[in-house]
Amino acid sequence: MTTPAKEHPIPISEYAVIGDGNTAALISRSGSIDWMCLPRFDSPACFAALLGTNQHGHWLLTVQDAVDIERRYIGETFVLETTFTTARGVARLTDAMPLGSGRADCVRHLEVLEGEVTVEHEWVVRFDYGERTPWIHRSKDGADKEIIRATAGADSVILRGDRLPYASAANMHVDHFQLQEGQSVELAMTWVPSWADAPPAVNISRAIEKTHERWVEWVRTSTDTGEHDDLVRRSLLVLRLLTHHETGGIVAAATASLPEQLGGERNWDYRFCWLRDASLTVEALIEYGYHWEAQRWRAWLLRAVAGDPDDLQIMYGVDGGRHLPERHLDHLPGYANSRPVRVGNAAVKQIQNDVLGEVMSALFAARQAGLDGDRDSWSLQRFLLNGLLRHWHLPDRGIWEIRGAPQHFTHSKIMVWGALDRAIRTVEQFPDCDGPLDHWRRMRAFVRDDILKRGTHPETGALVQYYGATHTDAALLQALHMGFLDAQDPIFKATVEAIESELLVDGFVLRYRTEHEVDGLPPGEHPFLACSFWLVDAYARMGRISDAEKLLEIQTGAASDLGLFSEEYDPANSRMIGNYPQAFSHLAFVRAAWSLDRAKGLR
Image (cartoon, rainbow, N blue to C red; front, top):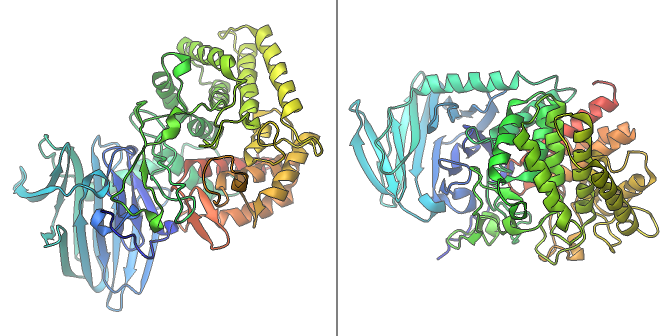
């Protein structure tokens, strides 16, 4: 039986994110952790209220009767500070997930700054995305401190603190109490396997301090971040947050099944590592001086795709796992009643011929940055390219992972050209890399001729979404980034004009018109933020600086008050749509900002 959805779900923009490099949590402005997967991004959620109700798991620590709530990240970190003001007092909540501890902890510290406040505490653990009510056991740890342990199957979480909630009749743990000025409460939740002993208690104050230091240390290693400094740095921090610390895999988003259309069925799980998204993220990080992440991702890539090139997947699990079956969680009503709620992703089995182009481009950028690959890296690239050349001419599902019939997507063919181009340039520029240059050059020329002959509009000359179509696709803007066309090429200019005419909506850009029914789903979605930033990037490179500035000013207004971007944006209702925070949006923003700075002579 499905629990009814919340009538008015919390707007996506009202959520903050914290993380420890292994997973992340979404916290509402009121102090409710409504989404957390432990111990990894792609683990089942133990707090799933984001896609259901509080009964599907949440952890609320708040101040009652607040007349004002302000929040911020403390500097350039993911240590979150929320200040509650009531008629009688002021209290400050600090939330963090400690970095580098080798554990999965979430720590919370609430202190009263002025007067007196009433604290409300609810701890509702539901494993397996809100479906499993755990067995709860209160006991003492080695230091003779009381703990609460919730266990179900392989998972357990332990709650510690100087004031623990009590059990209620509704299988919840709740507490209400008063705090005076100068008083505080500290709480920490730790995930451990159900068969393991409870680990030692975390020093909460020290954990918050060290986490702050580690985030500040990381962000300071970047090069100059330009005119949009604050938002660029926050976006780079998001990209690091979504990079798994142990494996180097980069997940596309921290959430699953947040809808692309409220009440619709375009609800996907993005907690996996797409080769395309990760490749573009690596290129963005390299531009801003972050090389360690590129090295880690390259090592992850070698492990994940090892094997027969015909078995190459477009996405993998955080650990490189290949088995990501899609299933529906019928017990969850979905965000804003958007069903089905999906976990896993059936697109894992799709053929998307563009992916290797992005991978080759990222690895080429890494080599250019001085991160020379080993022989295994280049051997793998040649191996994968040979596999691509056996089937590049066949239709595929494309960058947008359509669930309709495969097509000869023009963007996919451009990326095939890009894979060949980067292979050729690698051999030309790096003496330790060899390959059949003459053959690759002939193939590159052949693919280019095929695209220009079959992938352009017969009247306007603009690139079209797929061979034989007359409509456009925002992904075609990547022809400029890949170097297939230059900014002044009449074909590219015609393509930009088509995108402006067909896809530009109130300063934001749709991926494509779903009314053409190419994707096999009911029509209807909102502008895609990555595509919107791609148009800014194109304007900047074309010399249309004023247009780029105006568009970017509109688009940065889609960020939350904490500088976070979702996947899509609904300009008519000024609200975020889709999974959040979205790596694709943040990486496209930092690259657009880079291009605009360079066009203005600031780089």
